[in-house]
Length: 353
Image 1 (cartoon, rainbow, N blue to C red):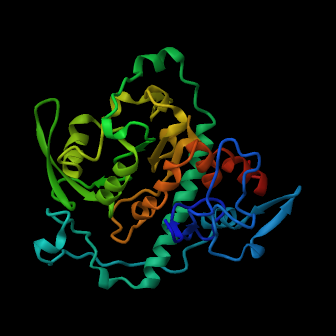
Image 2 (cartoon, rainbow, N blue to C red; image 1 turned 135 degrees about the vertical axis):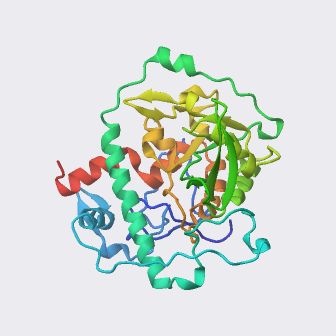
């Protein structure tokens, strides 16, 4: 990456949850570094799209950006000034224009020309604010999770073989639903796929494919060992994954609900069951609760349902070279997302109880 790339996963150093700029040439974090650059320094890890002077304050010698926390606080209290009404249409384009979906289009497929740039911006802000609210609530809930007993982890331990081409690479783990795809029900969706259940009955799953999902998997497979870890059942997940990766060249391993650990009625994806070094694994999941015990291994991507303008996976591709070359992926994620301290920082900032 010779030029700056944008990663639109919001964190507490961005204003209004806009895109953040990553310059790979300036982005170097090593485990043995004595001094770790902070976002406020001259050569930032993240470059907010705003003037930092207007959104920072001094607290015990530390510079904090308060803009996101303020927005989260206000978003739940203030009414939306303008309601966005988006007309739903059936796509009339020719089938070749629908690639890579090639299937039944949902009734809520959007015609791009019918939505103004202003409306797109307002809708995006709403999505980001909701994502940050969910992040805060999830981190609050994680504090009450029980520790997983060692014997329970041992029961789930896996011995996944390495493919020759993935030797020496780090491992990227993708969630499935609301990260790569969204299941919308029978008769709807970008594609309509048959699913056979364990009881012998069959149904058809309407599935929306997130923009750039296949491109993201392709890019990841060039740099990493790729695993999809879903809390869904195997009978459903395999149908979706066979559609995304019909030749089984992109996804090296598939893990399902049976591999999750039940904690407080949540399906937790505990990375300790995978026979890889913990510092070499990154999990990309819209539900922070899924990687509750490995916050610094996680990339908290925004949930996706149908937005045709979504570019989260495209922007994520720019992040891949950064983590692939890192000594410890947790150092990189910790510097970007601050998930371990976000809840406490928010509570401290606003005296939240």
